[in-house]
Picture (cartoon, rainbow, N blue to C red):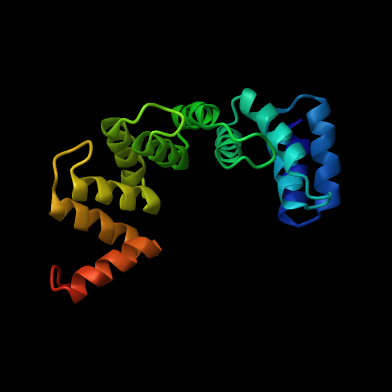
Length: 194
């Protein structure tokens, strides 16, 4: 089976989407977990098949229930946005948490945002702080920006303008537009120099 998985992935990389779809479909018949993720990806993008968000969601969900972390993240994202399914914030939070448990750094950031805003979960700035910290330390630019915002306002942590600027800078260096805007504004106001 490993050879078939590699062949399907090679077809995907070569942008031979019809072949990739056929190979992943055959693997899905054998209940190979990641094949459902890749079928979801093909349906979501409309590569080799007609674009279909509902079929993408169904395949992502099948992979998610088989503990494929990237699929768990995609299911959460689709549930959060109501794409290919009915919008459901609490289900989105559940799947972000499942993906985070398996090490998906983007899931830590998105789950942190849900706790910060109280969407699908009870608002909890301390949990948001912990989740943003984990993702920020792993290099996620959005989490770095979010962590900086919590430090700036003292939400879930002690207010610390220096740490707020430090995390915003890290996000800005990675190209995070909102962080770059804040750093620019602070330079113009004379609050920071660099």
